[in-house]
Image 1 (tube, rainbow, N blue to C red):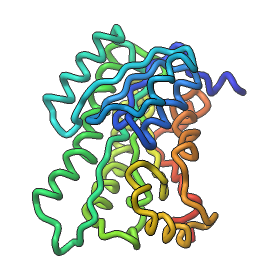
Image 2 (image 1 turned 180 degrees about the horizontal axis):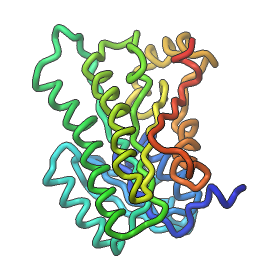
Image 3 (image 1 turned 120 degrees about the horizontal axis):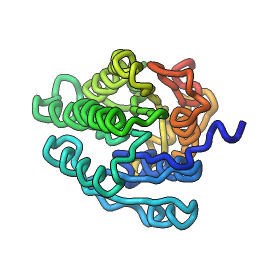
Length: 254
């Protein structure tokens, strides 16, 4: 059974991989044997630089703004060149949030959220799928990151625009999966619940309030979401496509 989860000789690209869930996904995929490339607009945390030696894989970081078509294309082109065209797994994780009420959300703020959370995800997946078709991989897997915000209102924050972007991410998965099935590329999503990351840690009052909303009474760590990513990237999920895995400690059922 362990061999079904092996990612040896596969290459993975993760956006938003410098910290938080993206970095945890990179670590998990590397532990399973995959070579790792990450895109982000910030330098990765020091732990990223230990991945290669720890798991005997190749790693690379590229400064890429996924909301900029030019930056995304340039980063992707360099990645393809550096990794000799290899790509089997893509995990578009990059995302942003804004705590602003519906009545006060400006067009510009909304557009910024859409640029990263929807267009950035969609076109990262599109570039990845195109490369997978080109290189002929037989184990292609695209794993987009949605959110519990695609299922429910976030009670502790004013985030209607953010919820809309994550709903769009989850909704794009089945039709993309349907179009890519002929190439043997699977497409699924992960919807994390409340997670303690570098973005949420500065707000202890939020972390504490979230505990009361979660069935199991604790906020997730990025490592709690990691296993779902490895599962969806691997042959263990080879019959799964067009689906969402909601890893939320029960919050959407509570």
